[in-house]
Every structure is written in structure tokens, then in C-alpha cells.
Length: 155
Image (cartoon, rainbow, N blue to C red; front, side, top):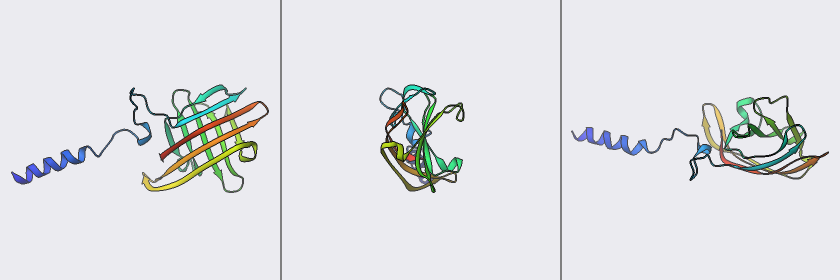
């Protein structure tokens, strides 16, 4: 009897440690996923809008160093890519048509281009988890991207 009670108590205590939602998608006070920041975009190809990502996916899933900040409401993705030859770049694109509508800025085209990409030491399903932040203010020929996004877990 005593061992059965201990098993039940242990199961109840550990059940609270697990969550079915990704860390980035924890709901805010209104039940909506919390945003990880905002990036304002002005472009003839993509329009004038604010991308407010709620999730981050590590670039290692698609064989690049960096990450994708995804906004399910607008369908847009803000991608940080750290190229070992050319350095960092930011790319904004529509998730549904990633190669049709896209805007890319390299660090040299930006007044501000700060990023942080740190491994957290966690690994989930063979994908490294990162602490990732991006602060950009870039413009070229009437197109621009400006804002900040960050997360403590991008996997």
C-alpha cells in the first residue's frame, strides 16, 4: 500500500513538470501566444507590415547557422543567417512562398545590425537549442527592415 501511495505522489509531482506547448508559444494573459518582438518591413514586393513572431526555429533544421522567427498571423518569417564567408544577413519572406517573395539585407546595408546566437546546451531531437536575438535597422532603395526580436529558446 505504501509503495502504491509513493508512486501516485511521485506521478502527481512530476506531471506538473511537463508541458505540451513549445516554450516560445506560452500563452499570454489573453490566451494569445506571446510575441518575441517586432520587425517593421517596408517593401514593394512584401508590402508595409509589422512581423510579430511567436516562435523561433533553429537554422540547424535546414542546415544553416541562425534561426527563423515565425509569425503565424502574417505568415512571414524573419531569418537570421550567419554565413561563414560573407557574415550575417537578415532575410524576410512569406512562409508559404519562400522563394517568390523575399527581402535580404547584409550587415553593410544597415545602420544597426546586432545579433546574439548562443547555444543553451540543450538538444531536442538532434536539434541544438539557442538563445537568439536580433536588432536591425536596414534600408536600401526604398525598402527597409527595422526592429528587435529575441528568444531564450530557439530549437
